[in-house]
Length: 259
Image 1 (cartoon, one colour):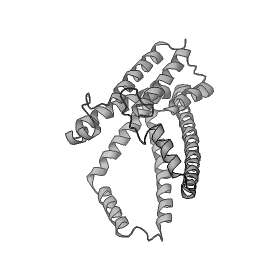
Image 2 (cartoon, one colour; image 1 turned 180 degrees about the vertical axis):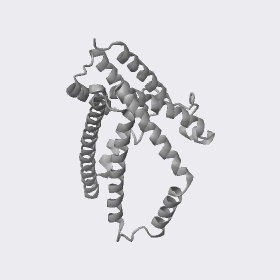
Image 3 (cartoon, one colour; image 1 turned 45 degrees about the horizontal axis):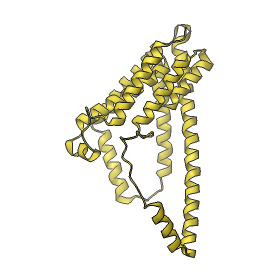
Image 4 (tube, one colour; image 1 turned 180 degrees about the horizontal axis):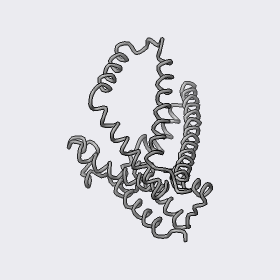
């Protein structure tokens, strides 16, 4: 949900829409609720802590007994691997933050296009975005096809995957994601035009909460047992806490508006 914060920043820079201090706090609450729902932030007492490895005394004793040249080389290789993983993680975080900033900028530009000067027609705007998406998807598929041409790796497994994909593309089931995505695109355009891209971030959090409820209803009992314990309405404790925090954030953001 860093893109919601980026959207608020871009709306201020492009449209002059200010956020009150309490609205900023509400946006931070929204960000925290998303992190809790995605289990990025563990909840004390709810998250199961797994104790891997031994105690400190056992570790020290093992180090004293097993310090050999081979062990030293293995530890050095492990240290290099950890350093490489740390660099990759840092690069991934930078890429995600940049993508969130671009997403927030795109949301702010869409909002300005739909609201300022009488505003564009949201349905026509959605159709224009759909045409652009189709062009980029065709370009992506064309590049992927060029990369796979001449690549004989995969054998029968790749052939079976292609057959399954073609079977799905020629069945009526392909209409399900097409229709749901079309309806979602129209609703996103209407929400952006009426209330703005920042409020859309709140709707996304409640969408995650609703999807958790539906997932709990549709998954079988054996899957629920594997997930662990009884859940209220199919929701995990993280989803419940995140929903409460998001509700408080929405109330704060709607109540303490800038005059």
